[in-house]
Image 1 (cartoon, helix red, strand yellow):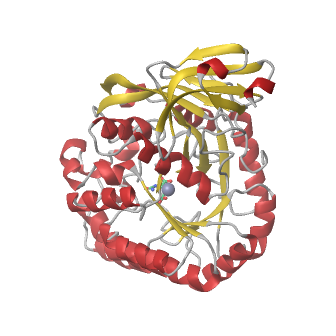
Image 2 (cartoon, protein in one colour):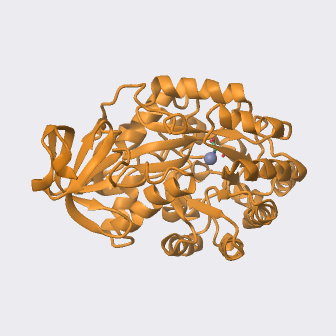
Image 3 (tube, helix red, strand yellow):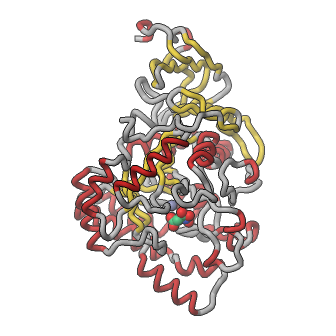
Length: 455
Ligand code: NCD
Ligand code: ZN
């Protein structure tokens, strides 16, 4: 087959290719943005450009199905240009953007508007979530036709831009999405618990960081996860549980999966690597995120669940805020969330270096599983012939420290300041074009494409 190929655009030779099963030394030929051949270096076709990947690992780009890139509406925190530059440098080649922008992505027009904004600026590929509201069930199909890749349900929400719909509307929406065959991503918390406890804590005058954990008690997530499973089983809707934060959800996830519910689950680096103990280092309010980073006893069970496949996917919930927005004196005024796309792969490579997981396991959770869950596999999430040439070259010998000031996000308030780097992405390609090199974005805004339209 390779012999039939005339000159190709690019050959990447001599690297160690990583897939979820194994690591093999092989070369990759890239043509017209796709992988044209994989094999020994001496079987590669002639190429216009060649890259020597000796000493490097070659991974499929990471697919982050949970990011908040803030436009339209909040460009003081992040723009699609800065966010996708951060993603590219971090080895992320596809992102799915959440709908809590302003206007929220709750109509076909808002979906089209966001795609247009993203299309102009993005240097990596992207998908756009439509938001499920109380009154837009009859528009979900049109939103999908407008190019939404999936839908987000804020089952736990205090944000007036994306309020939680009543259970009846959730059921209706699940029925529509079951019909469309589209997976629904769920922020699985109980809004009644959040609002009841939130008001009680506010009235009692509490403004300390622990009050946030009390409001977002584990039970709020456990109830949201199990209700999602019950509604999904009843309707046949495929669901994806966002940002799993508590070990107490794990039996409920296993129960739903055992019953045949098509449920995928993600967690994020901050739930695996941080705990409430980090409040002392960061300042107590800085750690605020929804759902919260919890006590240290949750980390090990979450790691185990991620490694045994109970949790399928590693995402980031990239939610950038300005440093000042994270450092306000009352916990209720402190903006929740952290930037994640630029640091996630580096953080996990450090864990690979420490023996916590293997590179194939990382590729499974960061690339293959998200692509499979959202219908992109094997066009994305794989190093195989005909896949998009979304490729990351990783140098496991790279060392340093994570520094907020070096990140490309505008809202660069990372909780991972000073975390050691033990391995890093050194070149990122999206559809065959280099979009980041040695920690610097080099792609042209506008190169990124909607994964739906690109189909
Ligand atoms: C999200 C954000 O900032 O957009 N923050 C977060 O803590 N996850 C909002 C949200 O999803 O609640
Ligand atoms: Zn989020």
